Image 1 (cartoon, rainbow, N blue to C red):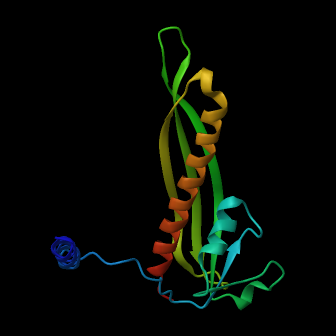
Image 2 (cartoon, rainbow, N blue to C red):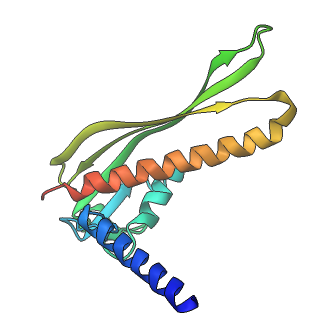
Image 3 (cartoon, rainbow, N blue to C red):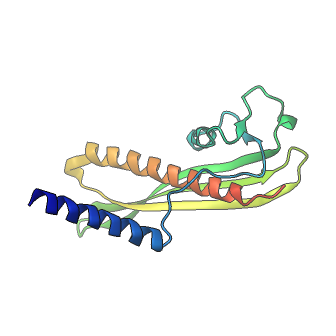
Amino acid sequence: MKRRSALVQLTQVGVAGLVLGGCGFKLRGSYNYAFDSIAVMPNPGGPLGIELRRSFGDTVRVLELDAPLPQAQAVIDILQEQREKTVVGVNSSGQVREFQLRVRVKFRVRTPQGQELIPETEVLQQRDISFNESAVLAKEAEEVLLYRAMQTDIVQQLLRRLVAVKL
């Protein structure tokens, strides 16, 4: 009986593998960039710039703080990094019930000589968050986590756009 259930489970795993393989599913691999070195400006920049530097890993050499700019093959300028919080819902007595959080980033990619590879572009992420005045500390912690998740999403979008750059 145990042998038969093990055989059934093994068959189910095999079928699931075939279905996933047949639908085109594949794990995300590493990105292939057209450049070997990049400068992230301003240096050191805000939290998004710091996370972007870390995200390149071993595939691209990110210039250090004191390195001269001409050593980079590409330069990404973070022109604006803005966090917004607006009220989108109130109850009948005027108390806030829902906020909308936004992270707005403007950037451009260029060569050290000034040739524009990606023109000035804005990326926007937004999330809605409910609010309850009896759980203020928990909602503040949730807000921090949502901002961090939006920042990570934006960094991933930037990396995908950098893959499309041709020198």
